[in-house]
Image 1 (cartoon, rainbow over the protein chains, first blue to last red):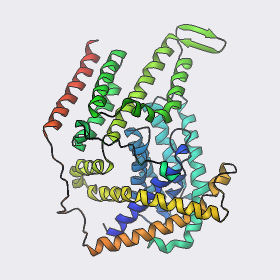
Image 2: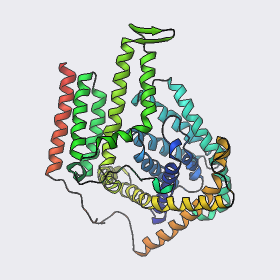
Image 3: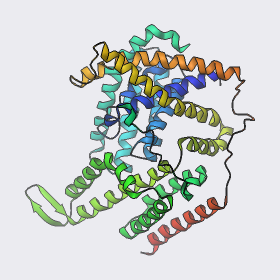
Length: 155
Length: 266
């Protein structure tokens, strides 16, 4: 692996964590709109974002009040989503979609089974999906369009 | 505003728990969390509570500090508690219109509530008593065997180290950009959720550009020093398995055995 790839991934992880920390009150829990999730559009620009987002999520969840289970499930969801986004990069409109689906399903399952939040499973999933939808399409998609102008910073 | 944010929950100290090998602590935490799901009645929880209280006492992290960390999840705990209490069908204890508390509901509410609290305390003690960098080292070492099937353990750990190193730098940078944009009339705080979300774009773009400039400098610096990955790289503080790790492992085995015995016998 090239040094640059490593560093870009590390920096993307740091940005993710910083945004999660600064906007913390909204970032954790079932009512979360995690603004940092908007960064899930980054695989469109560079594959380094796949491990980057994974690590970012891991590091942010290290601070999460939900502990280790959230670290694993949340980061796992992000990793799957980032790989999905990377594969869909030929269609920019679809790039923010994988994180919405992956998080709704995986975090929904986690909250329902591991933490015993006794709401209907599909209701939890829909709720989380909604938060992700806002983060990914309202912030993420415009971010993608603006960042296109600065594409060269990823090179 | 940014200064109030402490990174991570690390509680500095040099207790026995702090000094344990991070690998022991990671494995121990996992085993504890799994053990919590093996518990099927309140006697089991009594053992689990005793176990975690002992660890907390040894770590010398004040209990009040840990409980303060529970605050953000308090709503979820309450929510889970009440929904379990009112939504479980069974023998009615008290009923008022549509709100009915059943015996089973009360049992479930306490059972789930205690498990949730223990899950959170159990895993937060790991992050409270382990420096992020040590945790990273531990993860790298534990993932080591997976290198054979292609998991890039060293690279992942390196990315994590870089991320941890640059979080404070980028926090400061974000603060600066926020202030600069506010001086130019940007508004991050008013409007509905969509408007507020959109107002973050003028923050994100400069943050990206500045962060990737840092990345470029760092790449150059590392290449100039011939960084070439994990092979044959030595570290300043090597991890060693010591007597206390063996003791801790024995304690853990005893704990799991007690939980299992309780499950089988009572």
